[in-house]
Each structure stands twice: as structure tokens, then as C-alpha cells.
Length: 80
Image (cartoon, rainbow, N blue to C red):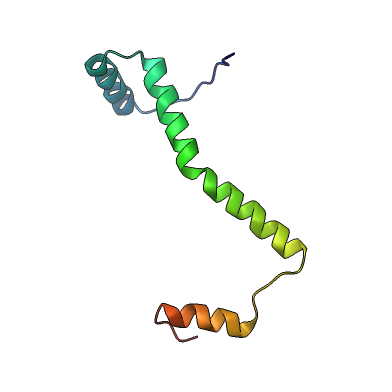
């Protein structure tokens, strides 16, 4: 798979931690950073999908009724 170069400025302490992790795991710094970014993206991708779904629903005019909102909050013990 083709790879592209990405750069970022980070704090010296974070760089030191990455270097230590790289040394202990015997993995390259590039591997550690690539794996961390991949994990972050995978862990947070659901939010992007949820936002896009919400935008589509809003554009279609699909909104919760006042009663649906009230019932939702009552499930969590909040009286609105």
C-alpha cells in the first residue's frame, strides 16, 4: 500500500514517550505513530457516521416530537 508523509508538531515529553515505547517494543517510531493514528481513527469513526446520519435526518425534516424528547429524558430521570 502506498504511504504518504504526514507531519505534526508535538511536545518534547510526548516525543520522549514515543521514543521510549519504540525502544521497548523494538518498533520504529513511524510504526508506533501510524498504529496510534489508526487506532484513534477507528475508535472515533462512529462519530462521523452518526453526525452524517443526523444531518441527513435533519435535512429530511425528521425531528423528534416534544413528547419523544420528554420520554427520552424521563428514562434518565430528568423531568423536562
